[in-house]
Image: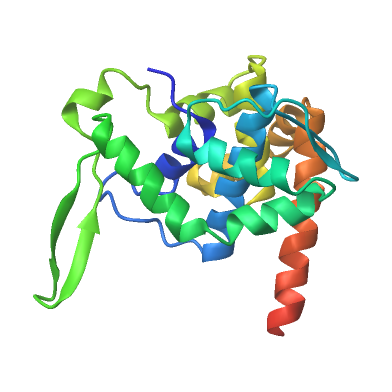
Amino acid sequence: MQLTMPEEIMLLLLDDRTGRPVGLPPPAADFAIAGAVLMELSLHGRIDTDLAQLMVSNSQPTGDAVLDEALAQMAAKPGEDSRFWLGEIGSRGEKLRDALLNRLVQSGVLKLEEGRFLWVFPDRRYPKAAEGTAEVKEVRRRLRDIILSGDIPDPRDALMIGLCRATGLVPLLLTPPELEETVSRVDQIADLEELNRSLAEVIRQLQASMVAFTGLA
């Protein structure tokens, strides 16, 4: 079963043991999902993008509701760059997370468990469903194996690792000692794809802008 990049990012954002969100700041998760949407559309041949511009090269729907909503918005508003669309798509982060989680539950990859925290607060968990584990190799393990090996990744995995680097998700894949040992390896993999280099710079600019705006710089 082939998951989309937004779906795989959503799995990374869940704790493997508890099924709860890993607790990253919302902008990091939102930019990761938005970047995954752009990368998946690029792999489908629907958009071309770099630092200067983003163009819809094929407006035909992909059949994926999350991708097609973003594609329709881009086609209706030409002339905007990657920075604009990362911010625009990222601003709908909560809606996108809900849509992706619901889809992963419906496809049997995750299961929804609802309860109460301290008997009062609603608590939702999304542990992996037993029937889904045989169909999908665990995303975290796959990316981790690529980083720790000397293997050349395929373009999709190189894009995923580049997106994790740009949005600060690599610590979700590796232990602290492994992080120190594999900095150059992660950079090498991420830099295999031009799209990684351009979107990474845009994400850095957006994050810097948000930090300055909130007065945390």
